Image (cartoon, rainbow over all chains, first blue to last red; front, side):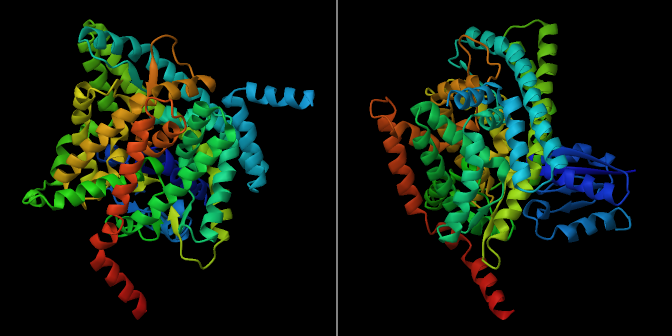
Length: 94
Length: 462
């Protein structure tokens, strides 16, 4: 099972939107995924346990875990491409 | 007629945890999100409400007595508890005007874009809570719903204008094109911080000072985590309140729990708003095909900027110190120390990420915040009580750093009543605020003149 960490300013507003969308897309494609939310400031200490970080705000000091920074889930523009990027990064078929 | 009155009273009497789900279910269906999705979302909102109330219970039961013990022991004048923005948001969404304001703000925004008053299309339904807060607090202050709604909409319009004005900085400083931050309680500081920056430009030598954000973030980053911040602050208040070891440790864990649990509960409220939010986004953006607009988003998308995080962390101890020494402050900062990355956004952005200036600007911002937070506490507490939040009786007043960041609201509600002791202050605030904004109105475009020229020449080439 893949583990994704979604980071935003508060771990409340924008990351909830992103996390729910990712869960929905993965479920529809039949993949198991665990999505956790956190604040951008918590990302460095949590990063090591995750395969990928999706962030709505810049995050730093996260070691080897790849980061995709995106606001497409919020604006609705370019969401499809970003979802493909997430699948690519996790080596999954879209 | 009597039956109608009775049924309206019945629905309002249900309290937010029941009323809000019913309203949201209706909104979801109107925005064609389907029954299943809307129903689940509506119930989730109700659950979020119950959850927030549980955590507030823990916060006021545990922190309340400890804070007053500390305050009494040192003779501090800090009788107002900073319960944090999650509580402010929950209270706002629970007020009787909230169900009306959500569609009103959306329609008002669409009209303002159609008549070219603004270019910002605010799709950030979540942060409508600030605008609803403005409206509801005006309602409590005036007991006049029409006037309150008018004030709410005026503040909405000013916020959209501020978002338009700061959009070049969002594009060129934060690197987000086509986006503006229509986030009233952060962007309303921009005229003040840009004015400070303009003054700082004139001080010789000052503009050369800077510090490295990465190093600062790495060194102090751990204090930005709610878990550590809650534990440390809880234990500190316990020690200062003269608790025994068991009490100190318990308070530390309890406060860590509050800072970790509160956001999770509010995240449920947010999750429940997603269908409305997506429906509204499609509704608004569909209305302006081909028109050049900014998508108005949550300022949360820029706070991770390294300079911003660094300043926010350094502001934690400075804020606590300010709370103690400022003669006009009566609020003990706590839960909203976690919200400082938002409060300082425009303090740091105005100086294009210069940390030394960012700290100076943020300190001035906090001095204003404490003044407003103290003076708006009584209304906020009344509002909390009306939506049924469990605020202990007696001396405890609630407020917050975020609540205290609503400059525009503060000005408007105090301008309404000439007999109010803050009437003159509000006039002075309003005049200074307008003059400052006028003074710096061209500064953002000037700051990014090179970048804007480059972007425009690229546009012509393609």
